[in-house]
Image 1: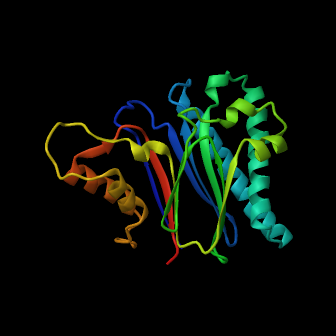
Image 2 (image 1 turned 120 degrees about the vertical axis):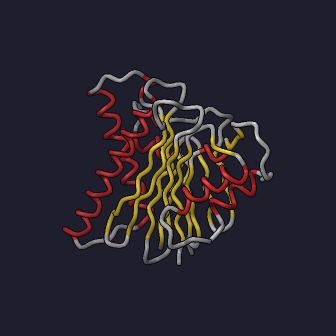
Length: 246
């Protein structure tokens, strides 16, 4: 499998990219991928997405070490749940230790565990975002009012996972992308005339086209081509991870 990453600050943002991504080994044949999107109306909104990302990176490394030490590979769905619950617990503890305000810990999350041998994946969606899987586009949206994990850090973690998240199982993984909702914010900023392109064509270029597969900067190259040919750039931060089974 090949993995491609993109994280780009939106044209409306000046100081910080409020998105964050993680792509980390979580076992000998497991990969953890995640994209986060901090709440723009929150305080230091880049902080929450970065904090969640750093915690997930640490947890993935712990998972890899545990598999090596115990010589056991977890069932994929159970591993995703355990990682999610550990993230919730550690985030809750840090929230208390740092005495954070409610608007300092708001970020969406799409988290996936990929089995590289079985070509399968389990994903959990917290808040909103976008997933493309094997030719199908799936949007997760809640009237622009994401149900952030930060809203529920005083809940029982098991109850949160069962009632406040969405899950997706992917079998026979051929083409998978997880993306923040910046994918919907491409706009023209210089007022000049360019070749026209639809939203569907933009998404297809990022999620479906299989050119330049040897170029690990394939997604960044796609964005530059859309800028130069179509005059469009995302107004909001755009972050995605694409996985192709080659």
